[in-house]
Length: 208
Image (cartoon, rainbow, N blue to C red; front, side, top):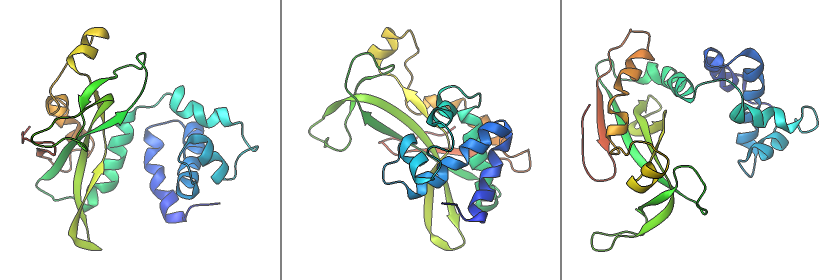
C-alpha cells in the first residue's frame, strides 16, 4: 500500500530531523498507520506490506536507537502549519493527558488527577503517566469556522513523589513550557514573530 503523493511529500519536511536512512524507514510507518487496525509498530509494518521485506527491528530502532530529536520533529510539524497561521499571533493550547499504567518501575509513573471521573465535589486519582502537550490552534481555508488544535511537543510531568524518587524537578503544568516559548520563534526561520498565549485547558489560564 502507498500513500498519496501529496501526503508523502509532506513527510519530506522531516529530512532536516533525521538522516536519509532513518527517514526512508520512517516514511513507511505513516502508510501503515493509515491502514493498520492496531497502531503498534508491528501493526504498521504489516499494514504497509513490508513485513519480510525488512526486519521488524529496523522500524523499532527508529524510536529506540536512531539519533533524532522529538522536539525537532515537532517543529517540523509546526513549519508545515505555518502557511495557515495568523501573521501576528499564534495561539498555543496546553493540555495534560493521563496515560494509565500499572507497575512501580516505569519512569515517571505516579498518582495524578483523573479528569474523566472527577467532578467539582469528588476527586478521582489514577496511577499513570501525565503528559503535558502544547498544541497549535489553527484554522484551515476548507473549514474557516472550525479551529483545530494540533499537538507539536510534549513533556512528562512528574508529581512530587516521582520527582523525588527519580531525582528530577517537580514543575507546574504550565511552567513546563514557559521557557520553551522561544522554540516557536526558532522553528520559523525568523520570518514570523510568534507571541505564544498559553491557554491551559485544565482549569486556569497562564501566559508566556
